[in-house]
Image 1 (spheres, protein in one colour):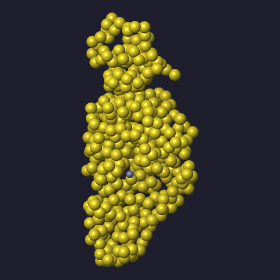
Image 2 (spheres, rainbow, N blue to C red):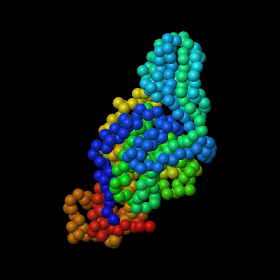
Image 3 (cartoon, rainbow, N blue to C red):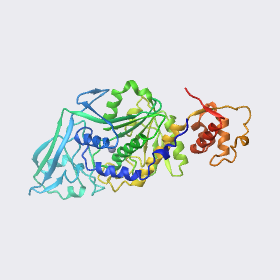
Image 4 (cartoon, rainbow, N blue to C red):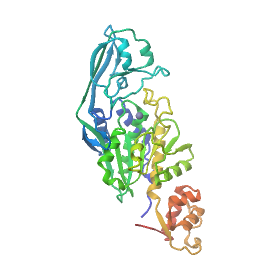
Length: 432
Ligand code: ZN
């Protein structure tokens, strides 16, 4: 069986632009961990890839958690004493504390202050705040807006509902030649924020769309989930089949100008950890590898000790290390299609290693085989030293990734050498 160059196969030209366009379409929607904004987002993903939309009822127990009530919002505003709207949900959905209970009241500035959130050091940005698991209401606003507020009284309206309903998530499995799976998971619960995490949602969508058009060895399972509770719910419902997951990636924050960051799985030496380190190390672009820590995105759940799945995280600048994080400044100007494309290419490079890192056996292990008589010297595009490494280490105990690591050579060069040796029948794949 020949090798598929995944990078060539799925790196469609202009993919960064396609990711960006999808982000622009999803950006205005008010999403949360449940509700119609999340549902509508899943329906838009469905236009590109036929994901299955799952609905899990409020009150469902999932390990130590419970699926919460479903939240929906139509409108919200604050009007001043003159009846002028000074804060308007229609202008930015970040203005409402996400998961605010409904309220309709008149309050003084003194009483309202307890429910207002601003960023004094970034006075023009609106913060993004949530209150999922404690019933509360509030508004997020620019600090400059806050400073301009007078004594009131203010009319405060949040036209929301918090009722029994469902938690929505999207899932698709693209069947490969075997049942072993590569998991790609991304959180989809944030309202109008671009890098965190529409970039991950839309990159994953385009990756699934392209993978669906090529032959692949592994099966690929894509998850579009509300953060934390979505991953916990999915793990709870799929506990019996988690053994199929051989590698996985959490995708988030893949559209900013920073360098690519890979965070290792809890195992630290999983194949995905090694493939990511190899690809970033040989890419010629700066990048960084972080050790696992039990803080971050949904890798926290996948890498909890009861599962310890081989799932790492790929992003650019880590969350919290850029000031725009969780503010209105994480908008469509903050991300760029060329950064999205660069992230996409890095990911397809990692998948290329996973797909093609097979184990072969040298058929002529006693002394070196004579390469010249097989036309293998000076064959175009094949590195002779790489052939010698492949022949030497194809003893049945080394994969091509092992050989790339041990030789210090690029996986692609090693894979090309292996392909030439397969054609000459000097190595054969070990299966089973
Ligand atoms: Zn976030």
